[in-house]
Structure formats: structure tokens, C-alpha cells
Length: 340
Image (tube, rainbow, N blue to C red; front, top):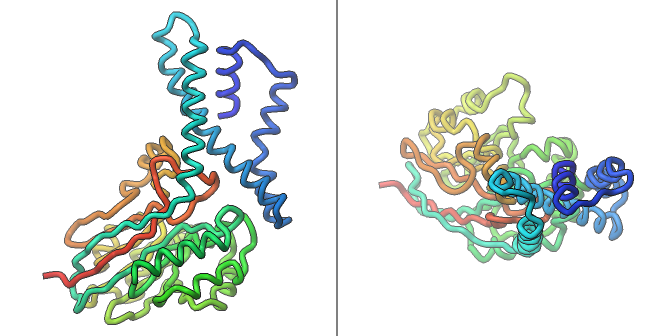
């Protein structure tokens, strides 16, 4: 992306940098160096460096997208247009500023879901992809907890990527989770795998959070199932085989927490009435959404099939660039009601 944007800009604006490839290589490596420094040295300087480098990745993506648009228009022009390309880059910069501001917002989205076998209504708060780390620190979790408590949930379900992996997380950073007014259940995502499941287990054991690792908990007559993200499962192990080993047969209302929105058919076949996922971030920064849709059929919102439901959250926090364009940080309130 750096090379493509630089080559296009150098041609249109007629300039060149000395040692251009070395400069491009250095700039392209900033995020890697920032990630390493934030992991090794925690503090204001390393945090600021990481924030700037991660922001640049988002800005670069929008510059790249603007350059792709300009490249698509170029065949219809008799010559390069400095005004047009400058306008597209200017628009990308304005969108970057808006995306930075938008990424600090938290919204609540509500759905009502009839769940087979449910005896009485239940309010479920769904959180996912909070990505606690260098960008989303303790104060951000406090905001998430306050907003979640305002929804007055009966239970809170967190479907992975609570840990970001950019810094080593301890229980002090996650302490605000103890202020949630309802019982909390947590299943792992791919970033917990990167962080190390042993460290995750040790950290969560010191909090008032129940970690479900390919396990079932009963909450007011509802089965809550937590399964590791597929990247943490042993080779050859499938969601279907795990649900089969847990005797998930649909005789009771069942909620499955499974980080990545895949294998929904297996979940439905095994009697899961509601599957909760995240992972996609709804692309986080448009037009990355279009690429995400190539890999996941369900990337955001509530889906229904065979009388059963899948909710894919766009995420409660951000990963990488602290930016959102065409998406929002979301706390989801699912009001479950008995199915007629």
C-alpha cells in the first residue's frame, strides 16, 4: 500500500524522495516497531508511539482506497489531474479524522429474540472484541461497564478478544468488569490464543468472571455454552464434535458463545437456539467491509434460519487503528422472550 500510494503521488505531483525505498520501508515498519515497544515497555511514550503508528495504518488504508478510486478514473482522463487526486486524498484525510472521533463512541443496539423452551424473559448483554491493551485501556472498560449496567442485563456474555495482545494484561486493567451488575460469562477469541491461554486463565481466575472453555453453565434454566475460538482448537476438532461431546441436544434453551461467525449450521443442527459471535468488526474501516464479506457470510447484526438465531456484533472496541468508518463500537442488549 505504501509503494502504491507513493508511486501514484510521485507521478501526479511530480516529486521524488531521496532514498525513497528505504524511507518507505522505514515508514511501513513503524507499526511493527510500535507493537514490539508497547509490548516490552509500557508507558506514555510507547503508548503514544503505538497510537500514532496504528492511526497511520488506518490513514494509509484510506489513502490507498482513494488512490485505487483515482486509478479507476485515470483511463478516462487525458492526463493526470492534480486537483482530482489532491481532492481524493483530502477527503481521505477528513474521513480519517472523523473515523478517529467515531471510534471513541459507544452505542447500544437492542434486539428481541423469541427463544424456544425459554420459560421467562431474559435480558442478555453481549460484549465482544473489547481489545483491552494499548489503545483501549482501563478507562475504556469503565465506560463499557457503565453503559452495559444501564441496560439492566440479567447476564453478560463476552465472546472473545477481551485481550488485545498489544500489551501484557493483568487483572488490574480488567478490574472494572467486577462492577458489572449481572453474572458474567466469557469465552475466548483468537487474541486470547495469541496472548496465551494459560495467562488468560490465570488472569480471569482473579476476577468475578466465569471462563467457559468448551464447557456448559446453567443460568436460570438456560444452557450457556462457551467454546474456544477455532484457532485455539486442536487440529481436526470442529464445533460440531465439541457440541456433541457436551450433549447439546436442544432439550433446553441454549446460547452458544463462539467467537468467529462460522459453523452456524452445526450449531443449529445441535439444537443451539442462539449463537453469539464477533470477530468481524464489521470491517471496522470502510471499504475494508467489502473484503470481510468475502470471508464471512454473516458480518453484522441478527440472522434467523430454521427458527434459530445468530447475532454477530461489530465489536465493542477496536483493533489496530483506533478508527471506525461505517461501523460503531457496540454494546448489544438481547431481550429473550419465550417462543410461542
